[in-house]
Length: 540
Image (cartoon, rainbow, N blue to C red):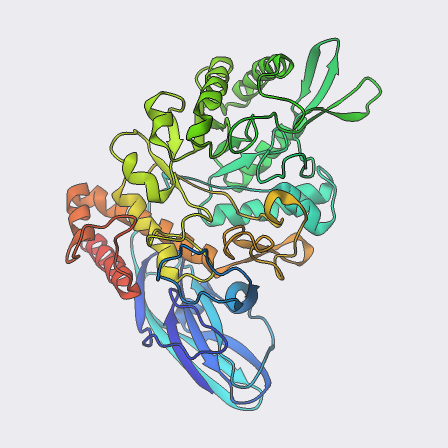
């Protein structure tokens, strides 16, 4: 049986021997997580077990990388920085390598090893991976790891990956706000926080996102409403329970769901209320135009009650509001009116929206725009506290993204770019979107990874629902978090030698200065940069 030690930036396909050179080792700071892989190919069917040996073994976990079907690998305008552009089985999710693992002859597999000393170890040591086949015996590989006696600083970047609690209800067959709802959501949110998420999409109303016109998503509205005689009464108990749970998990910021529908702010979101007999009915939705005086009156009353609530909870300055997602230039007039209204009734709140037309900012329609990566040069240096985002549309021009068909370098390089551009926040729309496009139907993420053929696989989720309401992480989630750790390491080095010298280090020896569209397409470059940063931290 053949075994090769690889970095975490490689992807091991079952039908192809890895072409990357063997990975010898790496350094890390004592409070971060770092990963590598042991790829192996048995000559016989059977089963294997994985064992970690060495001083660092007690701080490490081993996972087997599992494949999922990719239908839509990339869009038509895709550039050439992809591993494959065809449908097939791609490596993606990680299952603990406990006990025996069934294997087939001639196929390549990968053991993913995550090392997390958490200040329990410093210095150098070798970590050995033993893979034992029930027929072929044991093969071994080792890496040398240096744990530097320094700690990454607290994450300053605000990061939200849109959280979809309705998809959790659909997958597990549970009711919103049941005991199981709170238990399972806590598990999913804890995983998100462990991988850098500190801001969460909060469904005060069912979010009007990726929903077919005239259709609807499962109601997960946190705020209960009663309506009588032109007056609205708001019950924030579930919202408080949500916020308490999120804060216990480590969430710091709350991204309040959009007050108008996606792509132009033409309608109100679905909002339900209870009548005097306790019956639930829709009071606003697709049948409500944004010019509706009734909806304006509702929002005024809601705003007053919501402001009182978040002030009591002490989170007013931790809340972000949305008007409408991704409006275009033809919708500027309508968006501007709605944005002005939201600013009027929610004074002092930050309003953020994903949009990439600079005119929206230039004309004052939005003070905190979130442009996509391929439009960021229009905004960089002109917008204070700039955010950025990517989604299904960023599969061209070499901009970073996390599609399953992309090399992991393209996922992780985002961290260095966030540092160079001094980005304050990052948004992605699919932490756990287990629906087809427009939420026409629910999907099984183990069988459908492209939202029913609509998006490149990997765009709509980075975490898998496991048994008993737990989660399986994707290798893409791990690599993405590595980018955040790179960002924090650069910030730490900046505190020691200054930003100018760090920027000089980042661009050193490059043919062109680093941009979202210009960076080396070689994983070795990124590892070498991080090693230089680590050693400079150690020296200083």
